[in-house]
Amino acid sequence: MNNQITSQKSGDLDPLFLSNLLEKYSTEQSIKKWDMGASSSRDLSVQVQNGKAKQLKGSQRNSLTLRVWNENNQVGITSTSDMTNKGIKKAMRGAVEASLFGNKIESPEFSPLAKTELEEDNSKISSPHTIDDLLIILKKAEEQLIDTHPAIDSVPYNGLNESYMERIYINSEGANRHMKLSQSSIYLYAKAQEKDKKPRSAGAVKINSELNDLDINLCIKETSDKLISHLNYKPIETNKYLVCFSPEAFLQLLNAFSSMFNARSILDGLSLMSKDSLGNQISVSTLDISDEGLHPENVGAFSFDGEGTPTQNIKIVSEGKLINLLHSEATARKFGVKPTGHAGLGAKVSVSPDWLVVRKNQTEEDKDESLGVKKTNKEFILIDELSAIHSGVKASQGSFSLPFDGWVVNKGKKTSIEAATVAGDILKVLDSIVKIENEQIVTHQGISPHVWVENVSITGEA
Image: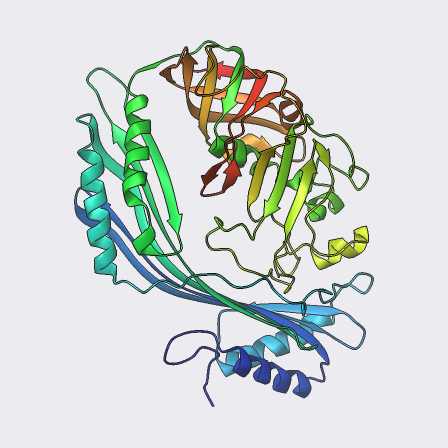
């Protein structure tokens, strides 16, 4: 018998061996009910600086979370990275001991959807590359980016990564989930310096399931175009402005306040919403928001969550009304609905969005049809990317104050803003949307059109 749960030839997880092992150890500990989530990843990543290797990394990560229910229905949980027989046996023993201190009043259960049929697995597994392959590609990308403009003097932050990931969920009632996928990504963040001017910087990210299909040339072009557009900059006066959020920026803002749609956050009192908020109008009627983990553009998506629940596409906001929440098994029970496939597995089961998709509701009319990034003659602020999300957002209060990269746009001419901060209340922002453009743009964190908001507070910084 193998002495660990990964195949000795490939390093892949071995679900059959693991299931048999847990059955054996649970019987020895007189445990009739248990479940387990395990993941494994193999990563190669490189960074370069001035044409030379700055950092080369190769890693293999394994993790296992085990839950057991004792005869009093108390739950004990342990996690380990030791995938040997000895490590798993120790984890089982630790979980049994921890169950003696489990919550007697409230206990998690298996997801009722843990054994239902999954969507067809269309994930791609790319052919592996060596770390030298990645290094050659990134060196060339750095050189090409610097050559796009005389003012670009360096690419201080960059990275090329190739990952192979697996996830398993099994339980004592016969649930058995197993999925593999691969993902490659490139990140380029360049700096430019002109005489008697402040240094400027900009970056871009691209992701694909296969390294050979990764659009490195587009990443170079986007980074260069953004950076060059920031060379001509000026300060901005503190005032309220008509603002157009780029797809990336609007998704950053929504993800920062995703606790609004998170049933776990609502039950914990950490959300702007409450159990009674379902059906309430939370934005203008033109806004639709979905969480679509199964979207074909969502590279690196698993077909089930940490509890074995199938990943599902959930419509969260329709015509501006909150119509659904994201659920784990426990929160779904509290709300009297089915779990949505957004749970993690841990000492306290977390809930998080997969892939937000923003759309304009076609049955509704915008407040200002004349607006459009490519057509309006009105002066506006184009916010491209938000910064300091973790420190500048108070999610439970709804407020934010965030530095941003962007431009003043007047009759189609873009002038970079030297430094500024956008501030406000998320519900007021959603209620002040005057235009949602039709064209949806795919980003590395979701899909959204450009979204226009009136009377947004911008603070200029000297």
